[in-house]
Image (cartoon, rainbow, N blue to C red; front, side, top):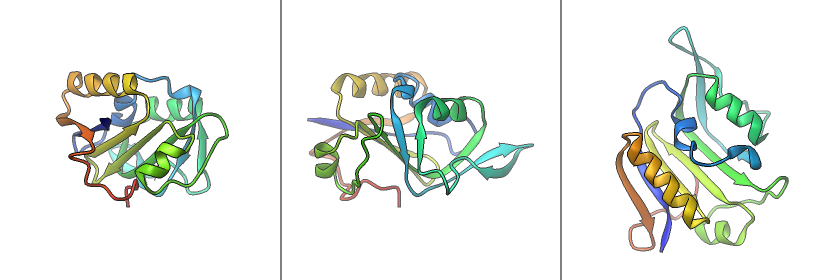
Length: 154
């Protein structure tokens, strides 16, 4: 069974999270922002945080603007997509399946992307997009190859 996908993005400044999420309408979700470290790039330098500490929830339209209108550098990120206002604490895949969360996107060490998603068609769209975007080592996450015990970037 396909649980999601994993792949590598370039370890450089860019708009990669926006590109990764391009096949889905991120505006229909409320996004829970977990622990992470990411910065907006100004004049080729790290500037303010992309996801500020005081904002643990961001609406999809605001996230879309943030991801499409800035150049940024993601070191670690933990994003969870929920129907409007339906949040819960998720640490394991089993908790994810039982929750209202539709998608979890994790970035580790600036380039390793893991996406868990409940919708099988969305998994296929994200997979195809990752291939077409030229990302490396694109593969499905299945019961057989999933080594994660916690759904967290930290």
